[in-house]
Amino acid sequence: MDIGKKCTRVPPSTLEKILDSMYRPASKPINESDEDNSDYDIEFNFRFFGCAADGTFSVPETFYLWLLTQSYIHHDLISHPVIARFMDLKWKKLRTFYYFDVICQIILAILWTWYSMQVTNQSGDQIGIVTYYMLLIILVYMLVREIFDFIIFGRQYFVSIENWISLIMIGKLNHII
Image 1: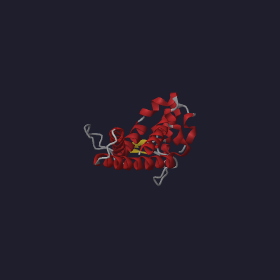
Image 2 (image 1 turned 90 degrees about the horizontal axis):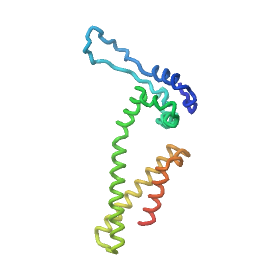
Image 3 (image 1 turned 120 degrees about the vertical axis):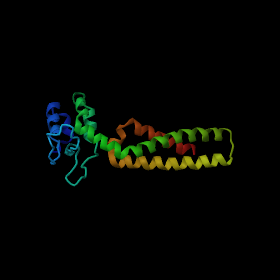
Image 4 (image 1 turned 60 degrees about the vertical axis):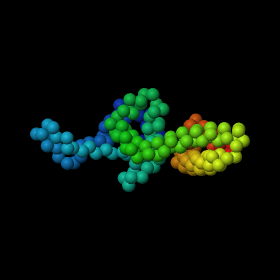
């Protein structure tokens, strides 16, 4: 069931019923006589997020979540087990890229400051040249990242203030180096 952009028009109670239907115990029987049995599975169905039967997505995976976060009356649904599990899986999949990006941003801030100090002091030493090339590498990384973001999100890319700040930083960095 793909309810699309209309998901925020659906009453929260109805949407909760739809989400409730998207998880169930796995088909493997659970031994009810063993109260301490922790060997069970729960199957999740992520159709709500635009996932087709073949595992592809018709829209960016978190698009419907973004729509729900924009609707105040749907905020309680963000903690629903299906959504929480989906976000947990997304985080496990993307956290390495996130941490890499944060580290690159920190390195960028340090190198940019260092390079600016080198240019101000007009020292053309070896450290200034190495800093220049490291900044150039980070600039290329930032450009590639923003291009991929634009390809994935299309016009939605320009709605985010974070993307505008990134574009301004890329422009300033390009101007400086």
